[in-house]
Amino acid sequence: MSVESSIDFQLVYRDSTKMVLFQSLMSNGWKYHDEFGKVFYLPVGDIDDYDWQREKMSLDQLQELVQRKIDQNEVIGITITWEDTDVGGDFLIWPDGNCSFMVNKNRKILIDRITDISWYLSKLVPAINSRGIRLIEYKVSEM
View 1: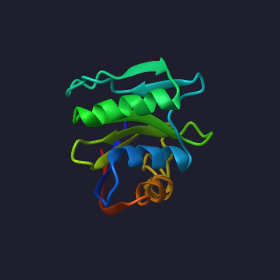
View 2: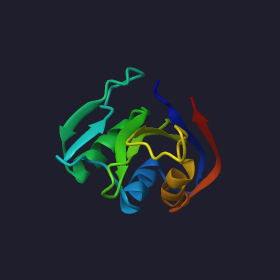
View 3: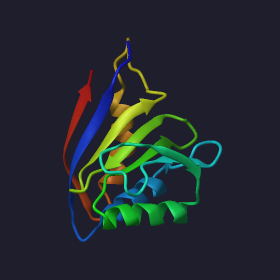
């Protein structure tokens, strides 16, 4: 039986954009590509299909894709991992600017099958709560 774990963040942007949130994650220890240089992402035009794609791309190309999704008011989805750990998950930025982190890649465990949420929060919150973005609430769900 698998465990589904996620963290939902409610944010307020002060003169910032969703692109700044994405850039903050990348400059605070989160990686956007796997060991083969490939990115797992939601493509432009993916409206509620969640048809994840995987391809090699540079950070500039990924930022262009993120900007196009922002311009089209689409959900931005990118699998991210922490530094060289290969621990991470799917990071979603919703059209309203809030975001979710689906803990689904080499999940950190406390005991039994309980996710070590504090490990993820200690890595995500500094990146989220910066550059004119303020975290006002988060909710954790585990099933």
